[in-house]
Image (tube, rainbow, N blue to C red; front, side):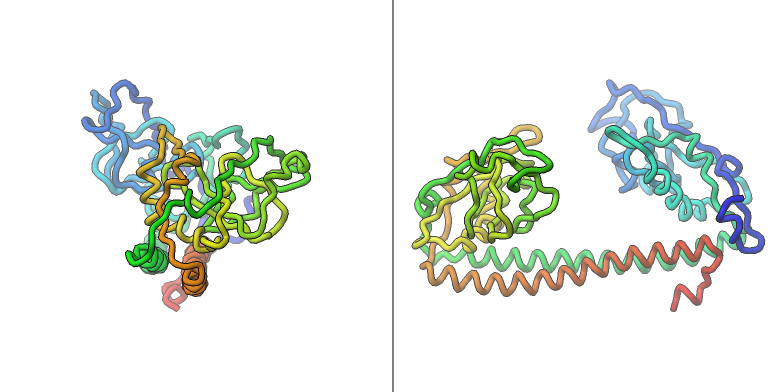
Length: 400
């Protein structure tokens, strides 16, 4: 006997999805007729989360049974398994996306929409994969869900709609507050570095030279950590997901020193140019996609340099000298040495860094509060859903 069935409230029963609905698989539309400008929107897996538009159209004849309308429930069958409501215009159901339809009169469709993702996630968690996880329509049909009487389903949905609407609104407000705090800090940096009273120099003038990192092959274990572009985050290095080198002696010239500033010269266009400062966290060397700037210590403070290179002003300049390909962008050492940089006195730089550090600390505290609230809101949704599908949910409990 199913464990859920043991604890079912009176009047509830366990049903397999194939007993209460039909699943329609998408069609393999001819990719030669795909268009970015003409035709009918074509729903692929990447489109279902947003649920209002598509990146691709199908510019050809098609069977109308594959038309998706607003209010339809769709499941992506590759990657992450999840059910989403389509809210956009009429579109076409592409392969590897399926639609739930022909609901039994004992099932209120929106009740299923709320309950099913728990079971899809359980399948995802145990699905083995080489590159991408896959789920079949047969697996979906065999999902067993708890099914209360139809009037109780409708009552539960009404409560969930109201509760989740309030949670969604709170989440949007919190995410906006988080965005505002980040933009405030970025605006403060921009205001500082835009001061026209300061002398302007180039990176090449205030640094002795720039140095590319090691080309040593990285390993999961070894003698010394190798910092790569993926370890750069918010101006500092992260120390998880490290790789290592067993050639510490051969790479001694790449050993990092306190206050070394490393520039990410190759990455996706939006990330190239991100910079981090080393604060002696643990012995490490740096990989070839990073550039170490050997600054003239009497002219340039390390933290000032790091803040500047991560500022909007520096990143915007970088876009003017970047060499781009389809997925990668590159700024070489010569281009980096040509970066303009504001240069007040060393003492003024240090005073500025103290002010930026103070604001950065307060900003991070605010961000932590907002991020914790977002996590709590998601946990609240899970808690409400758990009550809903165990028969414990009442309107009074949600309001409380």
